[in-house]
Length: 627
Image (tube, rainbow, N blue to C red; front, side, top):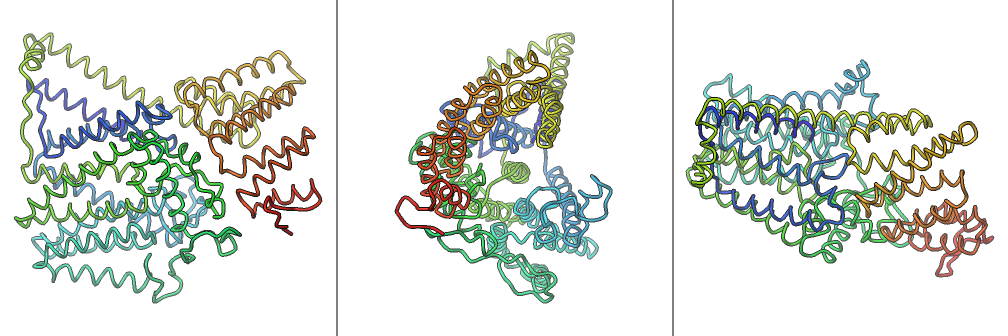
């Protein structure tokens, strides 16, 4: 996302400089202008009424994609493209995209056979040992997750198919055939079901509208089939060579009230999705108009998280997306946001279908890619490159079909701009301001990136127990990006840990660090009062401070109660509360907290053991004994 912001600033800056040189601001209209502006307006309203405006503006930390700023960035890139590109540049853009996809596909294929470029670059090791994940089982190359790589390649397969069908000679044909084979091989090694369904949907659309090219397409389908026969697929278990088996997945089943599927290797992802989707619908019921706020799913889901989630293998995972783009928009932007998002999709497909009557193969490829994206989004969600494609592919289609027209500025705006051109001095001043603004924004973006890098180092130092180093690094990251509450939250804990470590050797500095911890906590909650993760960190912070002063034990309990109010179905919070109550000798309250934890998660082994230790027997609230 940082890179996307940087390119947006450079591209828009160059666009404005070009307009100054040409002595006219060229903005082109497209069929999607009104739907996109409606979508922007709905997201602004969702941000205004958000439970966490900071997150709605910047996006969920560690993703960033999906916040208001990212949307503005994508829209600026969209209008920059349609206003400055022509048909030849559309094809050039696609070829650059295919070249990038080829590099990433080679990266992924080598990962499947035990060699990751990431490990070569980061460690100088010719293997895949730098990854905790089993990257050979499901590859992800440079995209961070198999599903995202699969969705990315699915959208590139159709433009590659277009170039194959329009090849002028055998060399071009076999070049693009090899490219398609490489894409699909890497795609297969992700073993991702949602993107596979999306690819199948796109292929059906492509075949229906391009029957006269069936012979050439059949060569491609035979190649795809050969890959699946040899290596298997996300949807089938058959494979010719067992060494290349796809990862085994347990069957989908609804959760019961007596256990999880941990014994079978983890709960099936489809089952968990059903639960998360129910939570998303519950959020929508409580925030039906503008949603809980753009990108706030991580906080609002905790509030309405179904209790059945506790019976899955991912019961203590944080879900910051609904794993369904449509439900995610419904939950976080409400009816208004979801309706405007739907209008974009319906408008684009309608325009393309009307244009497709002329049997334009490139339009058909773009439509098929778009359909694959829409199907994929039913099971997952967009990341940066996929989100860029959501806006870029319509831009490609409109430029290619001459569906753009000049937008004429109002007369008063043209007169105001004409002042710049009256004298060369004014023109040079305007250019200078644009260049200075561009460099200032680029520097600010670099500062965000550098602050994030320093913060990451600080977290590693904190995890390793080096409180002093962690404090220094986290303090620097907060200085670089003083508006980020995540930095403040972690700095508060680091200051508390450092204060605790120095209580015997430097009482004055310890007291100062204690005050700073409290200040940073207060600052954190002024920005994000409903962030459950920050409240969890606050619990840890107050608990650290309780080693300095026992009065902070009560503050710890209050923070826990506040966290429970925001995440009422989380059994771990009640269990942690029980541990603190046990340290205070409040056995009756401890037992109540443990029973509540077991009510929410009957197979919570740690809570069962603690309850047995406290009472001599582990009995659930319903009176049923557990061994």
